[in-house]
Amino acid sequence: MQLKKQITALIDKRIIFISLFVGFSFCLYAQTNSDTLKKCSQLLPSADEQKDMLDIYKEFIKKDTIVIDTVNKKRKIFSNFVPAVGYTMATGITGVISSNICFYRDTSRYSKLSVISANADYSQYNQYWLKINSNINDEVLNLKFIGDWRIYKFPTNTFGLGGQFSTGEAYRIDFSYLRLHEVVVRKILPNSFIGLGYLLDYHWNIETLSGPDSIFKQLQQYGFNNHSLTSGFSINFRFDNRDNPINPDKGEYADIQLRNNLKALGSNYNSESILIDLRKYFKLPFNSNNILAFWSYNNFTVSGKLPYLDLPSTGWDAHNNTGRGYVQGRFRGTNFIYFEGEYRFQITNNGLLGGVVFANAESFTEYPSNKFNTVFFAKGIGLRIKINKNTKSNLTIDYGFGQGKSHGLILNLGEAF
Image (tube, rainbow, N blue to C red; front, side):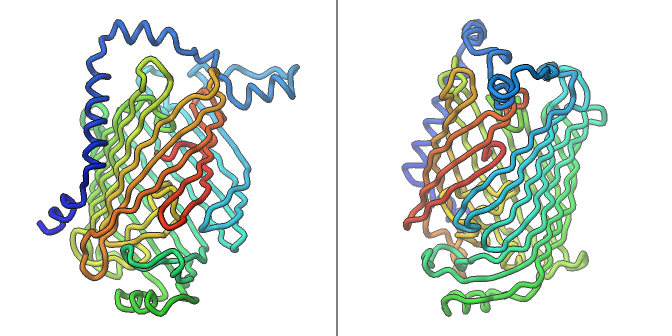
């Protein structure tokens, strides 16, 4: 009850205004009749009129090269590979190899796109990590396989629990990290799935290097050891009627995960948590290719205790996308509330270039009161470069601005949500 009251108290006029705006826009969209939508859809560029970087390559570099048409869905596999150089406050200048493989389980009209994405990174701060995310649909067995596997060697900064410490009070730590999350869900209704998962988070060679005594004392008080293990099972519910998991034009997404970590499975502590991930997409205006998207991501510790590095934290979601505008790990706490809105628009009629504007708000419970006291806001802009028009994969380049002179560049292959 206390947590519920704190969450309710956290909602201010700005969030209420956003909610009313979403509802009003959704009502306008829902009330548009199908004949009007059909007429308007004829005005939009067809798949053949869209362009991506491969088309530019063919036109300007390899004009005489014969390339097999990949628009037809009978070609089951599409792959994208992008080497790049990026920069964030957490990593400095970073060499990135980003790739994804998109495929259809079969060629039926009901088959949904499956995606396996992988990132390999090395930074100027001697950080390196490999991350593999998968979302595989098997319509034959009515199953969906969802994976989040990663390994890190990651010297970085931490800023204590809640939001009481400033960016200038960073404490330097180092650790190695292995994450193995695998969930299997089965379809029970159209677009609705339920299933089980096994989740492992293991940190080792954890070191406290240097920083303010105030943060070090808090780390010691909470419990900060040279290794930690969180291992447990989850019950998962997912609803997903999006038209494309990489870059949706429309639809809704809901992912609810109940996680139970057990000492019997090697965990440092017994604990229970709940993760709630909600997303909504629709065209605005409805006769355009511009998208208004909303994301709510919330993680609550229901009972027990989690190791410090396993607590909910900025930028440590499955795709490291929460809190654009803040350094990864900037905020951390036992409970986490997050909301983001983004408007995606075309810059060129052929879809090669696009842009976004976004804003987000996040709050973490303080320690040791476990109360929500402060909301942290950020905003930003971004550029989109179409890498593959068949899967609608974009190279995304975003720059976010948070509070307290926080800012940073974010580079991805695929949208933030």
